[in-house]
Length: 74
Image (cartoon, rainbow, N blue to C red; front, side):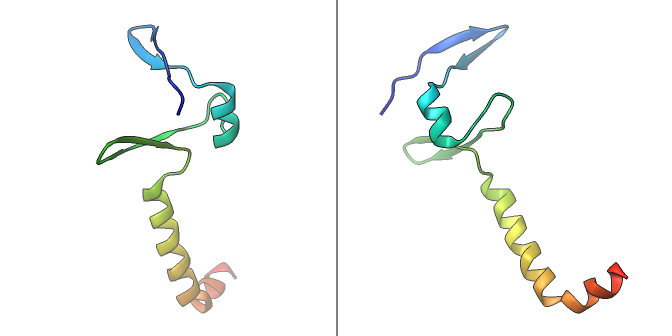
C-alpha cells in the first residue's frame, strides 16, 4: 500500500502518483485513468470496463455477421 498526498492544482485538488505506480499501470503523462467506486473505496485502472464490455459485444456481432461485413467492405 502506498500513501498518496493531496496537492493543490489550480482551483482543484490532485494526487501525485509515484513513478513506480505509473510504471506498474503502464501510464504516462496525458493518459486517462478510470475510477470505479467499489464497496470499500475506489479502484483506479487504466482500462475502462464499460469500453471493454462494448468491445466484447462488437466482437461478437462482427463474428456473427462476418459475411455481411465482408460484402459491405467491397
